[in-house]
Image (cartoon, rainbow, N blue to C red; front, side):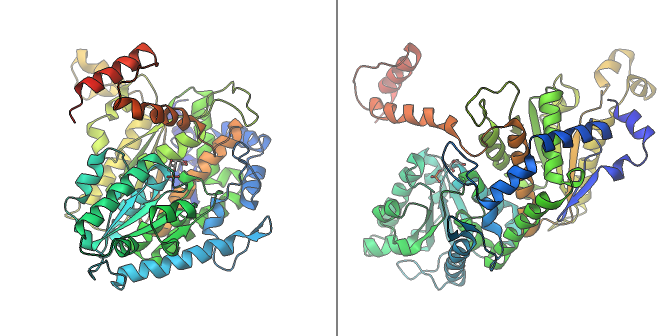
Length: 519
Ligand code: G6Q
């Protein structure tokens, strides 16, 4: 498909392929599709029962069979007073009971009523968690930095001790509250970091009663009350969620506590309302106007029909700097699967490689390959029309770059055009741009908490659509288990001289470490 020809032949294309959902406006016209392909893709969604499966998810059916769980993150953003009965329990009432408790504590921390063991006001919150218990709150905290008031949040995830050490360097234990965020409260990295945080508090506040120091400087976000109590955190300061919330779908559960402390409960409610806007849109918009569904279908077109292995997410907003990393987990952990729901091997590709960085930085780095490389990489370009702050008209520069990239990728520059610009003959080929490189241009008026919720839910349901069409389980993650299990075995081997029974490569690596590690 040649986008120059397609646009020339169809003046209504840009309008017809622009969809809206909540405060999001997506121009999908620079995709390598025509009306016939779009119709065939929506037929595919019908044939694979995407909307039926979506309804099954929303009403709490066990759609994650390998873990025997319902998948109910959509219940996390239903408004107060709504109700959803699952196995005789009103899960929406449970959600709001926790949200209300979170709001009380968040306000106490924000107002200074909650003090540390020395009576000092809390000025820093450190979220200790990894994966789904880190990426969501971290991404959202950065995205909504403009809404943050006095309290600063920090996020420690890596078991690399330097992550905690460097984070704590400028902090005062008397003013620091740790949020231990772990659904299972068994995650090796998080428990190790939580232990080191506890030691830092007890050491830094040596004159305080240790139990009081822990009670005033730690809260927990978890489903495991026993584990939380064993760590020494009062379960009155634990905010729960449920096994039907997957880690990578949990930023809108208690896992969002750091965000709520930063932006306040009212803005957090707006954030949740944004998710609900898109839940509703996904459930009710006709297929051709359904933005998450269409993003999913376009991705299927590129992955399965045109054989494109990767997908870039390029936010033209520094506030969204961690959005690509967040989406990497959401998409790749959900749809990086090789078997169908029934365990049979897939005979088609599944999840693409998701990656990206904020524009314009990427333009000065990897865009060369996107423009002229041998692999076509479909990309989502995300822009905000009205900046939270502008300095000297810089925002217009940013947006000009955003629009220019989409134009260049779609329409390129022919050899004749390059030559007509006066390029030397031997440079014409080097300076030619093939074009026909597809993009989705997603714009929003402003990056508010509500819009951020919409953006996240948009991608949640895009991923959902693709998983449903591929017939895979988007809600388990068995692929992360083997490495964890092997690491557990290697830990004691690093400090002993027992004989090693791995493969020759792994044995040699452990032997080298044993011999070289200074203690
Ligand atoms: C997400 C995954 C995973 C999980 C982390 C942390 O969907 O399940 O990233 O969030 O492994 O788990 P805990 O919250 O249990 O510590």
